Image 1 (cartoon, rainbow, N blue to C red):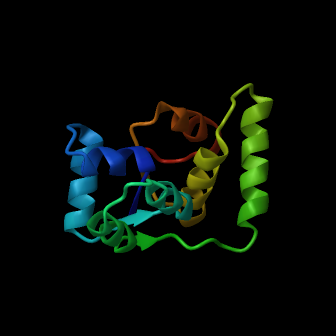
Image 2: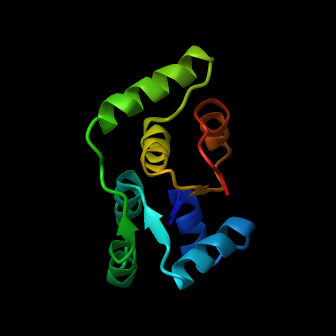
Image 3: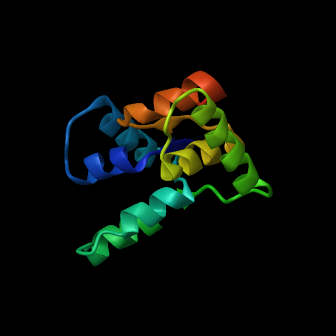
Length: 124
């Protein structure tokens, strides 16, 4: 299993180039791509989302929220804030989903490096 961040899925959908897009493409090809629930929400929030893209997004497996998720995510964000990082809530929730399942994250968003440094999130 490999989780993709919203930024990398959007780049893939828009046909952009990048190592993250290549990783998304490979994970889709071998049916190992998963999304955090927050990423699904972000992707479906596009007000002009066409039905085919909605179907594509909904066809990707999701990481289910585990018991205690919200508490762990809050503590994770507090840990980063104590170290003077300002993590976005959505990024924190995506990172916590990956940490709960011990899956690496495909992303082009550099903000996730703090989660890698302080919480052991594996980034691709």
